[in-house]
Image (tube, rainbow, N blue to C red):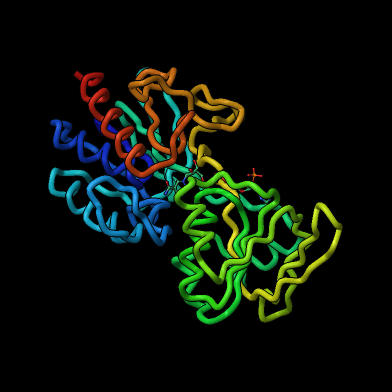
Amino acid sequence: MLDLAIIGGGPAGLTAGLYATRGGLNNVTMFEMGMPGGQITGSSEIENYPGQSEIVTGMDLMENWPEQCKRFGLKHEMNQVMSVTKKDEVFTLTTADGKTQEAKTVLMATGSVPRRAGFKGEDELFGRGISTCATCDGFFYKGKEVAVVGGGDSALEEAVYLSKMCSKVYLVHRRDTYRAAPSTIAHMKAAENIEEVTNVDIEEAFGDVSGVLGLKVKSKITGEIRDLPTPGVFVFVGRNVLNDPLKQEDESFLCATNEAGEVIVDLRMRTNVPGLYAAGDIRIEASKQVVCAAGDGATAAVNIIEYIG
Ligand code: NAP
């Protein structure tokens, strides 16, 4: 029986693991099917993590976190948790290989995955020119023209990143105002090879067997249709939370969630189920910042230690 099972190895899960093990829990396992580090490892430029005065990649930022946790005894199991149930004060986790693991407490720190924009050709051409990770795939479009879809921080930051290696970046947005932070908008506007293509609907991504050839957009104002000659299309239109492990046999969730499926927690990261906590992007009103996810993880761990007693 684990003291604590942490599901997810991003900033929230890793920080919870660090605080829980260092705080005296002996039997803590973090379930993370991929490399620990989380979604931030796909970000190419981070300039707002406190104490990091240089711009770093997400990969660089997260590099030492798993090692630090391991030093205090956090175990890492490379397995996907498919479901979490609770009976008689004991949680049971079922993993993708069909095995089960019991735990006294569980922290959901699964975060979120990129959302699809929903235009024609997006699914068919995904991985063949359509991408949601500029750090992973930007290199393939060195010296070429690409499109970035979205108007939030992710889209603008990644557009700036891509503008440094691509000949031109079309920033394709459905409105003409952005959600991104003012400083990020300023960076984007300062890049000479970013063309803003705003107030448009995406008609389709078109291509052939080799992959994407371009993006067809239609002006919401004039109705004009334009083909952008972009073999790379990067989509950053927000994220969906990964709450599947909480789904029960009858399709209800193990704990209370809001209509977006985000887990409802209090200021101690407690859900309405005793012993079940949530931290990071999966929780309601998450700021979706690495530093906040890490803070959530620490808060959850401190309270889990107290709960176990
Ligand atoms: P976001 O802020 O939710 O922005 C999503 C963008 O995609 C919006 O501009 C939205 O348009 C557009 N969009 C949504 N659905 C679309 C669709 N189906 N077709 C076309 N466009 C669509 O998402 P995000 O940029 O991933 O950021 C998520 C959170 O992480 C935010 O809170 C953000 O501040 C934070 N974040 C922070 C940093 C940082 O601090 N360095 C970096 C990245 C992200 P509308 O504007 O018209 O709705």
